[in-house]
Image 1 (cartoon, one colour):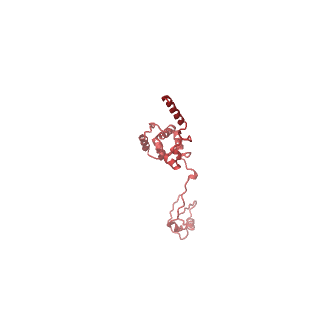
Image 2 (image 1 turned 30 degrees about the horizontal axis):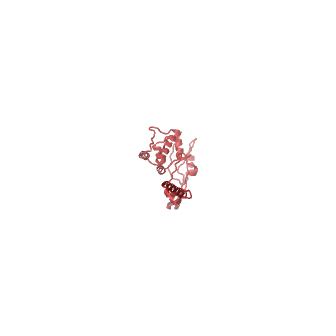
Image 3 (image 1 turned 90 degrees about the vertical axis):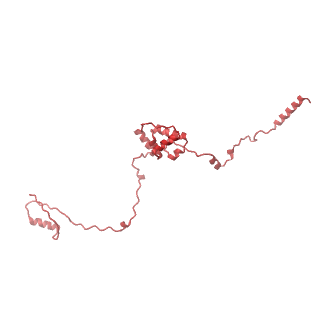
Length: 208
């Protein structure tokens, strides 16, 4: 056998062996490490998921938990719609306006408020509705929201019966006579009203 024939034979053998070589999985499926994870392992692997509604007020804690991009989008939406400033945001978040400005600067949100600009009447009404819903701050509370204080429990002083009021006494009266003076008639009129045993002070003023 020549070298050429031997070379041909080796190539045939390699080709025959390659026909039965295993390549990859028989199931033709590529498995991942997460395919066999439990629900607990999935929850530990994934971080917290936060949702942000641009058309709803938010607490300070929930706002700070958002990503920087979402924080910027939320504040910018409020600026474009209601022309809010740090004072308005502090009112919603329940924090000092200086805390809002400091947070925006420290986190590089790139949000700026219009200098010397404030809400107009329409924007203020929309902002109040945004914060409080249909019940705008300053409106009277609905009847269902009124809170009645419970009746006070009786104290020791209240258990003591109140003293009976003093009997009615006449302290003063006024008489007017017109015509020819008659002293007996005047005296009798006074005695009939005050009584024969009455004591007091009589003042006489006469107009003629």
